[in-house]
Image 1 (cartoon, one colour):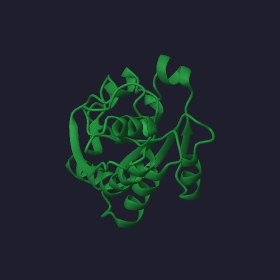
Image 2: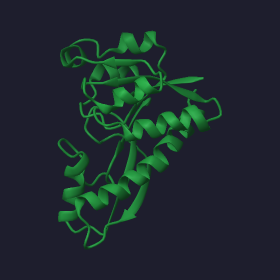
Image 3: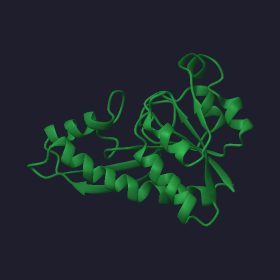
Image 4: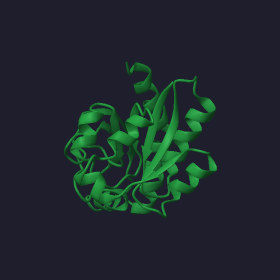
Length: 192
């Protein structure tokens, strides 16, 4: 069984859906074995506690300037890393140790509306302000640059002329919750 670490900085709604998927509906391919956060008040830590999943609160200095917590992840036999609203850039040490085994979900159709500072409501505001007719999600591999790795999966939704960023965010969240756990399971099935 593959072991997943979820990295998250916020409330953890995507983490919750992934945990539920692998805990309740999967065929034994994988389990969420660790939840990692950079914020001691992140809601995702409460979710992990409720689900009896070990947590790791990470320090910026060690994450970026030292070992990127690679020894801890290897010790816990983590096979795959899923970013679910994790706001720090992934350091080179972690990318090297888990190349093509770290994925992220972005709330827009990359390459549009990606890059530094483009996350959460900032993305939805930019999409609505640009009067785009569609938006969506992108699941991609993580490399050395923000929102740059190879695209694994995209799903679209309409952007209506009367939409607010909050209305668009609701449709995007629905796409994330529907697709992210399934794509993760497919990737893990093919992971050697």
